[in-house]
Image: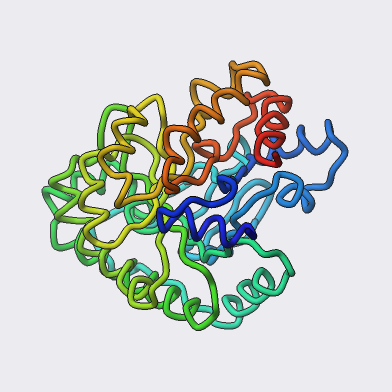
Length: 332
């Protein structure tokens, strides 16, 4: 089977000949790994036997030094966090959308990015990707504290903000769906370690309707959806399945009982991740890493339904030897 066929089989709850896998590294980790093992960054995906390739539809540019401005005009300070950063100043200081300038849909950029990945000769599972999809995008504009207060004090504003963000995302998705991509990977964190950031009731009121609108054109095309959310979102997994989710990432094992999760959702939801970057990979020995991967595959990979991966981009505190141990398992 090709990498694309393995991922397709796993998401459809069929048994592939080999559990599909994926590893993504934070910038400092990539630098350390490539220096240790003498490969180039551009070679890492093939070297790691990654089964998935992401076509990013987020955009932006560095405006000076470590300051990165995204497509919405949000400026992120990447002096410490080299991959995402911290918001330098929030654009919406008041619950008022009159000065919010929505980004334009750049059809030529979508075409260029998509065709570059589709035509690279790799038989991987190729997904369109939008990060900071909805809730994350709203709080990056407003601040998370103010947005959560808006849920109670400025409901009309919150709905209008989510509606505008949704309109833009749907326009991006509809444009990307003109090309033969394999699905979509969408990122939007709803969880914290002990539960959801806003709780399930507020999520159903403010997030779910707009997320369903974002999912709709992808489902109409018959393509699978992978959703990334850090934290504990057990309370809304049934909701996500209801509106069309096929595969959930990241599945943190320090939060979930993997056997219970598989038993409850295994026939309805595929899982992606589950090798902890928080409490396991930074502290384990390479042989322990290999054993943990095989154990996790035996739990989540029964009857398909699993893409094995670290729960997040691998951070700098993970020894590069542990990354190599993962790759050795994924290649065998």
